[in-house]
Image 1: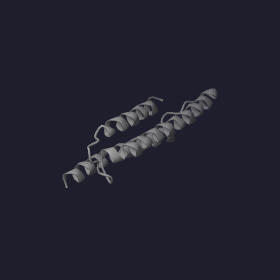
Image 2 (image 1 turned 45 degrees about the horizontal axis):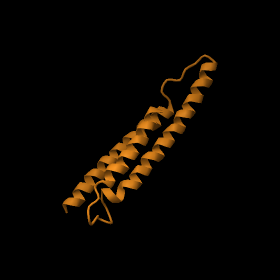
Image 3 (image 1 turned 120 degrees about the vertical axis):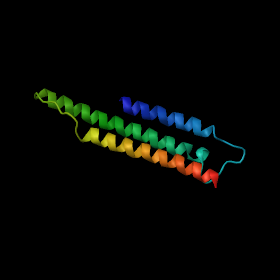
Image 4 (image 1 turned 30 degrees about the vertical axis):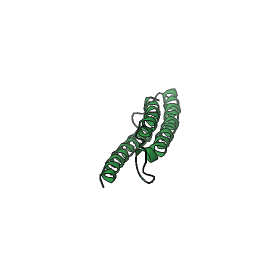
Length: 104
């Protein structure tokens, strides 16, 4: 839940801060203003997906505890870790690309 809430908050923050980058003649192809809504939507969808994975993990842990076991790690944790890495790496690449595009 913490990860999904953090992603949701980050999506709202990105949408608000990128929209503040609005200039009198915004670039209609590539820039912070144009990419604000799609990037925010990706963060919101990621938050929903991680919430679903969290629910799956919760029920899996409850079932395991009913028979005296506990799962440490698992595919859910790996999926969230890989997705977060891909998401943050993509955001870094987008920022570099926007800055490089503005300098052209």
